[in-house]
Length: 147
Image (cartoon, rainbow, N blue to C red; front, side, top):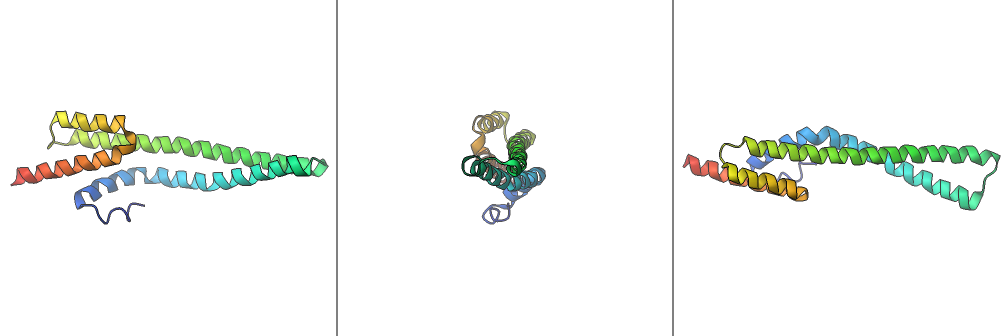
């Protein structure tokens, strides 16, 4: 997932983003597995349930099949909801990692750190972009201090 993005990034960004992805990678794999099973289960079971209800009607043998499809739909829905919960947890871990990394910086002053942290918290969708801006500024300041 990260390898195709990392070709254009500088090494200091690659290192930090690899640490972030290493932290959330197990959750991403789990989420992918859940979604991979949830969507087909929901689609197949709901399609067949609708088909049975509107076109097939119920006879003695059909009731058991309808119950099986209903159970499949319930399992698919449970996996889908768990997947949404895992996505929220991934976003929380991302934000937590970025905020702690910003707080650890010795190069950037506290005022700028608070700005970056507030930006990440107020605009979570732009969090990675803000974090990359922080890393760029930190690297530039380190280079200036070395010179």
